[in-house]
Image (tube, rainbow, N blue to C red; front, side, top):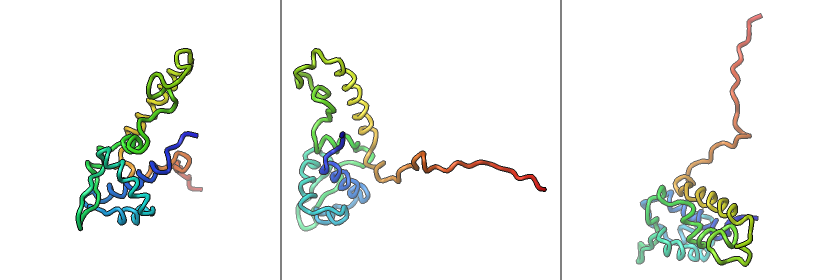
Length: 152
């Protein structure tokens, strides 16, 4: 199954909390409370997010964290790569020389294409968009049918 790690998922939640209050500096404990996560987990997330330049940390009595740039300029790929490293669906999707059969493999090029599509999708979805309500799913959309009843 393809999925991001639990920590990456939680990092996205913490980042949306920060994005919802872009001018505020929130402590790790405030972030934990607002995100519904344990404080040690949030502390563990903030280090790689700061190292990737996604959040800024401030020390002191009024210290805490805020986004390092506007939410509209942070793609989900930035968060995923901060937490997990470069996205690679298969051993050979990310770097050459990682797989023993890559020279004779008939599916390598297609896995790279799939990897590129996933990266592009994560790059095109911004943190700001994650704050927006999701569009209605196609199965839940209501269709309007104009009907005129003839008087009898």
